[in-house]
Length: 367
Image (tube, rainbow, N blue to C red; front, side, top):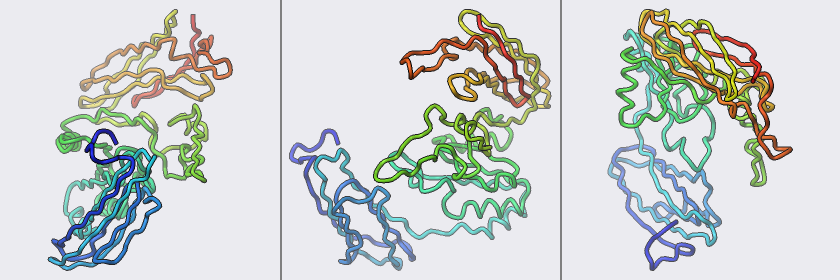
């Protein structure tokens, strides 16, 4: 899409590509063809793909056994489909590689003081424009983590993924560090947290389900006849878990610290612009740490709870501090679809304050 060669009609064109592939290692080579358009492909003259009516988004794969140095002639024909916005073609090959040896990992884990298993996803499994086939970690990663945890109680699992994954082994490992996709500095960041040099100050922006079956966002998925209904409505994310009363594996906002915290007194004051909260927090641990105070309003706009404010607090060992969290009156309104306008805030609001140091609940009348 967009600008290109003036001699090519982007709406209607075709191409034919040929190449000779030379295997660098022996074993099963898995070729994959993806695209938006009409595609035909052959290897050594044998047709392996005929998707002239349009290749599926999940692509097509074909495996062949090759010895090191063997060559294979690959021919791919492509034609755009007039009127279709996307026009693209991707060809790839997964070369044979060493399998992750669970037995070898177990032997190393038994000899070590701590085992660190890095698991997760890659752009082949998680990216824009397509759905993941499941919420499980691909390959034998779950088997690897389970076996290492059984051999070494002090097992840390570092998960590199952009969204929630199932963790059937979560209760069997010493710690789980969600590293997301941290870019070129992710190695240093993970090392700082795992070694204890830095406190993990992040909190989950989504709830992690126990498994895909118990996820409210999958209501209606995958749909049918080319139609998928998003039935979440206003119950998106953690609100959906509250509505269906699923207990997630990890709550929205979950995250631990190396320090121990204790929630003190909470004072709420209402004014014409909203509510001001003064929250006292103490670090009762023996090292510095980070805690995040979250404030929820309950039973507003048809949802059980709504995040209306939060504050990250850094405290040295033994220190205490008072955080002030302002909740503007607009955060206590909701869209009234029946009358096509923003609602007035309720006369009284029930709030809860949550942190690793404890929970406070109370109600306050608005001015």
